[in-house]
Length: 244
Image (tube, rainbow, N blue to C red):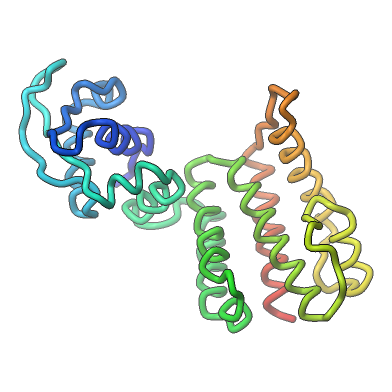
């Protein structure tokens, strides 16, 4: 069953904004009212299975007809304040990745989960969670988030490569710095840096520059094609790191 994430988010946000001891009336939220009773009821049924909502009960909507009222559980209230985690939960509800690209990332997650190099990382759980957010973000067309997370994962891999080889680097270097890529490329040529990495670096750099520049009102919109390019570059780098 495919899910409209905006409707799920509206259910959770509406519950969070309502008093915790009161039954939530879906008819009073414009997104839920537009979605309709049938869709909201089906979503509430699934959210109840995931213990995100509780106490579903028929209510006569103050704005429109009969609805199913509900309350958010403690888990639901936490998800209301953490959209990335809510997106991961919704992805689990839909049964997994929805595209060839996200399937490739899930395969990478499986490889990383059992790999000894990843097991030894002090930030292992954050690393794996970032990979999962990449495929969830891609399937939900959150391409800017995908770019940011891919950059984070690649930075981790490049610095771990240098640490393993006992090659000095500055902790502040990032994937968008020529210094970090050049240090790996010069010290370990033809092993970790693909020919496309320079283009990928520029995509990430341009996004970061516009995202943090307070004088720029036009944050670069990342396209699907750019997201795919960066995801596959990230996948290639992680695999090179694991293989050496």
